[in-house]
Length: 283
Image 1 (cartoon, rainbow, N blue to C red):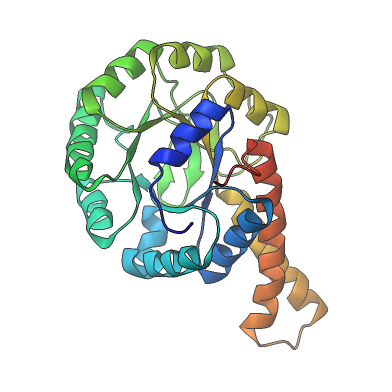
Image 2: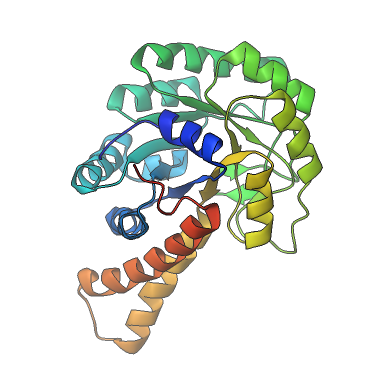
């Protein structure tokens, strides 16, 4: 196994009643930690970068990092553009070689969202690159992404949206939020079940950092096939660095505190892989 698209892994998850864990990465150490966790648990894997992460180092550098690590791995690894915020960025990711692309037009009105999403899906189809889109608006703030208070996905609009755009997967808004939760999120699982009845493609849950195991399990039971995790990986990495430097204040070798940070990330990723039920599903 090595570098693959997201299409088969998401369809397999849909058939198997589990979800693929999708993890946002910020540097080489996080890439290594996430893949190590997936290898240990024999899980299919999606790695993701947001537009603000891409600005930090470039699509090509992140892709080269992930692709090299994927070629060494024995589990399938996909590189996904998370929350692509324009047609132009999506096309840059396609040309560079990302194996899965999200175009997020959820901040636009319905018809504008359809137009930009369809344009990206049509452009990616000849290369066999699957496209994820979002309908409704996942709330909260992360990086340059600000979803405000969010807005729920309407099931009938979701049906029309999927049919008219030709996308491979759909991120739905059912009460989750990006970033750190300030209280207990209340998910509209009945809404999710209604969307599942009328939309046949895999459904995606954003803003899962901080959700309970029960909430994620019930979301998967009602149709979620991909679950995104970002904020808690950043927190784990930072806590690892702080822990090492707190115990070794004179340390100056990045490899030393990077190793501790990777262990923290690896452990949280293993928990989330098990939460998604995709452990042992790498084939």
